[in-house]
Amino acid sequence: MNIFRFIGDMTHLISILVLLLKIYATKSCSGISLKTQELYALVFLARYLDLFTDFISVYNTIMKLVFIGSSLAILWCMRFHRVVRRSYDHQLDTFRHYFLVGASFLLALLVHEKFTFQEIFWAFSIYLEAIAIIPQLVLLQRSGNVDNLTGQYVFFLG
Image 1 (cartoon, rainbow, N blue to C red):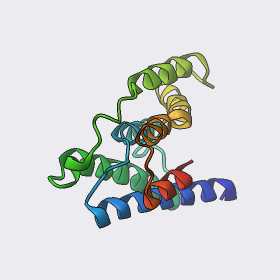
Image 2 (cartoon, rainbow, N blue to C red; image 1 turned 90 degrees about the vertical axis):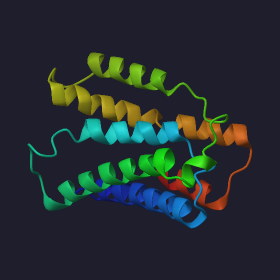
Image 3 (cartoon, rainbow, N blue to C red; image 1 turned 45 degrees about the horizontal axis):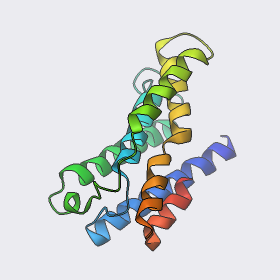
Image 4 (cartoon, rainbow, N blue to C red; image 1 turned 180 degrees about the vertical axis):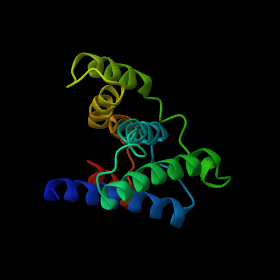
């Protein structure tokens, strides 16, 4: 196993756990960008299209399921949980994230290893992941107020 991939997986997993802890403990998603969460869910869904076709290892399969499941769980909390969704900052989370999706997909069509469905979506996920944090950073800059758990989440994510 590649140690750098493992460290990357663990820091991303820690960021997810910190975010879930913040949402659970405070019953609030204030200071969290729904648009960034949507982008990360899209990143993992696009990257792991091979989940049920190519088996690499148990660790790999478990991490894919954890990243997809946790991203969708966070989205569910922010959109549908009756208490948490009320704390979402609509007025601060106004970054036009669909431009990031479009630019990443266009770049994936132009820069990829092979012109196959899975390869294009894998490249798309790589490019999108590199910029998916931007709506979160813009939200934090606009709010001017960063609580401890949100700061730790962004630290481990970035």
